[in-house]
Length: 322
Ligand code: NDP
Picture (cartoon, rainbow, N blue to C red):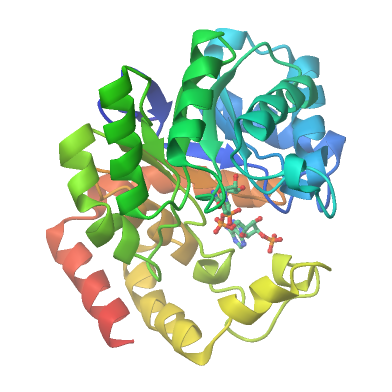
């Protein structure tokens, strides 16, 4: 495994990490989750990502039960949660958002579900137009001083709001966000590469990037239709199917396949290794609904040294033209 610093912080995360969205508590029960987490940890993965909203708290319960059962030393891995959307169906105004009340209560609940004493990383899952940023920054600072959270960050906040959070933290001697959690993959690059560019320099922020395969699309599995047991057939994720599948996106995926063939690798491995060419990516968060996927995706690291500038340029041309 390769380890990278989370921005300028001293925390070193595995370059490939593992998340629970859609899968844990829906496609994947406790037995399979145990197998996946054991495999990941065995291969050097030290960061497991979760959120209050994932299957309405069930994903955290499954992960917590399995982590307790596996008895990994607590100092051998990091676990995260994210607050904003709420953990219940149809949340009341106090059960969602980034108010001090919900941030504090959501953290307590995540700790209980995950069965840990502290969260290594805690994210504000989106920006909250109904809460002053001052209130959220202060709540996160409180959690860190209470020892319930080690590092806090944002997920998909506009760069402007992140600048504001840093200004507030600096002026009030509060802990500032250390990392962002944005989507980043061959089909979705703008925010990480352009909008956030000033943040890395100004604050040394790291990124824990999500959907490296664009929900599986970049494995090529959707090129000829939607397989029956895949993510895009899951009830409740119709919205994802709408946004993920388009002729243009499938066209780009098809055009990338020859590059993977020439390298003798799978398209999924190429897409994952490509994310790591960006030095501002601290960790690529993988998703997997079965063991073979996770094994294949973890092997993407072996491809990384072979992705030289000329191949990177070729990939770029294919994606821009496709
Ligand atoms: P991916 O884009 O890699 O999608 C993962 C899914 O793709 C798997 O569950 C599986 O779906 C399919 N897949 C994975 N590997 C392969 C393979 N080798 N061949 C074929 N199919 C494959 O990542 P995620 O979208 O899951 O994102 C990763 C993590 O990021 C999440 O688990 C979550 O922790 C986090 N995240 C954060 C968000 C945020 O807003 N902060 C939003 C979304 C995710 P299947 O088998 O069902 O088809």
